[in-house]
Length: 292
Image (cartoon, rainbow, N blue to C red; front, side, top):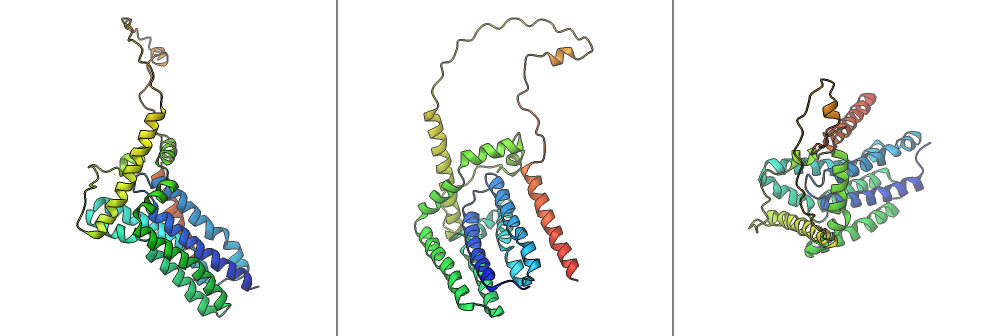
């Protein structure tokens, strides 16, 4: 049976709310490499959201346009990753990055809400209630987005609250082992945080300065809370005895010294992200072949 009107209306409202939320989250993501792990978590949620509704859509023969609109949050996150990687390589792309993040990704959220409205007007089912519900999501979002651009500290406080640097760094180090992902994406030169005459570039540098100030505040608080430990007087080290090699490897197993760092094991964050993107592309290709 077709999708019920009331159920479809609820899904329209939830989809508009999800697009607005992902617009805010994507716009406040910290730059790579700090934003790598949060981006993977958001991408997993954005992919699971439409996949969880697949059975409902198939059972009730929902419109294909409505199904594809549920993948719009994934598009928002993929654009963030592409722009971020290009900006790492090509410095002038920072202006595109500033436009993307302006007003909590206002442009992308507006496009997503407009797409849902076009769908609601085309299917001729409960046009007025659905349009009013979408406006109830978009109007407060637009007001807060414009107010946040007027008060720069709003975005800094929101980003610090959502992506606490100490928490995500601990999680990322626990996953990547030796931090190989951070080394791969880390800048070879220090970030340029000086004032720029280009408004778009200055907006991006202001965000970087907010993250840098927040990072320094967290580091300072950690240093203040950590009690000072007395430094013990160094003891004279005994002379090492000459090692005798037995040929069985016992001298290596019983060595008193430990390695400085353990080698990384398992898949890194970068490999997990590429695997999820490849799986998503394969799913899209399979569905396209099924329709042909």
